[in-house]
Image 1 (cartoon, rainbow, N blue to C red):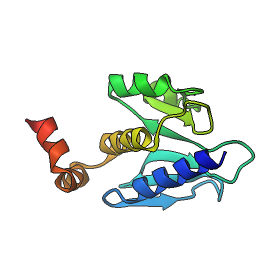
Image 2: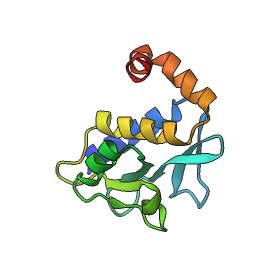
Image 3: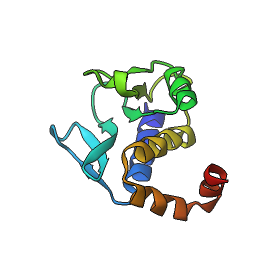
Image 4: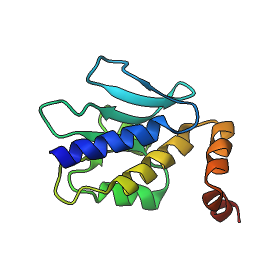
Length: 135
């Protein structure tokens, strides 16, 4: 469980560090989300609940979506969000994705909902990704 909480904390810090990202608690202290331009790109819940922490991200890229759905315990996100590409991944399962993979998914979710200006700012931070995608 401690490893799952450490992953959750690392992913939360990564998400909050993306351009103009902000953390909010729209449904109370147990429901952390991170938004950009008033749009949620990651549901984090909390790390203090009775169950292991997890996250939900929006993955439009078929390969990434398939990879996320193959994670132990992963499922389409509830409330109809799964139909739009949202995937919920528990972090406490044996074989749960690494922090690096989770952050890649969070970044992809961010890119899906962020305005072009913020995506350009993100690309400016990591020129090798922008070159690979544009070249």
